[in-house]
Length: 468
Image (cartoon, rainbow, N blue to C red; front, side, top):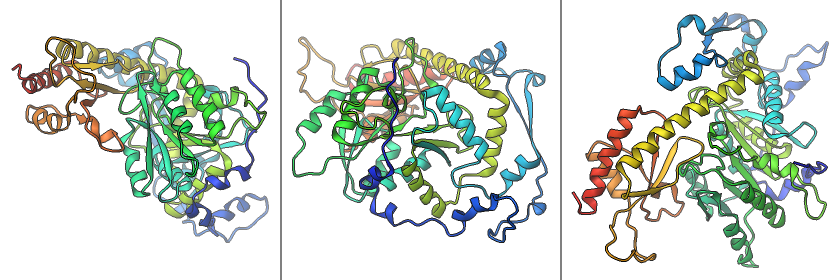
């Protein structure tokens, strides 16, 4: 794929995008001076750091499954542990442990940031010197929350794909944002609908300055956005001057048969701008280690324009100072022991594992829900999104405008009373409207539990349709 010359937007471009509260934030008078301690010969009386001699932890040891071994994928697919001797020991000691036990830079440990820059170059073709950098956070949710507050004022309008990850809806509601829904389908965000939204936008109303999207294995729909739609979204972001919040915790959980589509972070670099203006700097990308290493570690990172990351870091500096140095040190020891090749091997095993889980759920759906629900099998992530056919048709097909029913009471009450728990689709719709859709996660259950859960759901749906 040919690339154009990379030119990035200047820092001044982002001033209209920053919220009023973000503009009012000032750097910490202490943490802002931390880098000055690194000058050779300086004797620092600056920081109130505890003396590490009083830290009782002298070493950390853990073991890692051998991700490059053929037995590894088999063991996680079957749930059988590997023999203990095959696990690789890792130790965190010395300067690395001291850095993990002490206060650190707001953006993250320098060596971890360097490794993550290399990962983004391998995964998305983005190099240093293109106006972007990385900050780590306590999970990507932490960073998304801070980005939303850095960009949106109370009452602002925001574009959100719909259905949307339920975890961000309260962020927008708290700011009393008007959430403009951009429909999605099995091929992801419907970019032509987004174009229509802008073509009919009132001339006297400010256009939205942010679009939120989960492009791979979306929670809740499981959809993965097609490349042609992503390209059109990039073009629309330039034409109508908005930023793209690319929330991508399932990027490495892609298991589709076709090659994985390129990310927005990659595409903004390779798609030339029509008028010759700078072509990168509109994507703020959020990655997470929760789905591929550990959810409890609470470790994610954001990649994007330095000006926007500076605003996020200012929020971190006043809210929680930094993400855990100790967790960063553990993660750094892990990824450095793997190297990029070992990381890739681990990711291949993870995606193969979730593909097998998807296949089990798909087979159980066909066995139990055929004729009672409609769905498209996901190509990434850990969710099935299906529409319950709550009203059986008789004779001619039902009118397309007929009310399809609402899954909410059936899922929350009747299905639960019958021993199965899922989420009604309404919780993923910004306006909370009724819907016949349901979200089910296939990440944890074994085959017997999946089949039993869907058997129980089948019984409830048939009762609802009067077919019991």
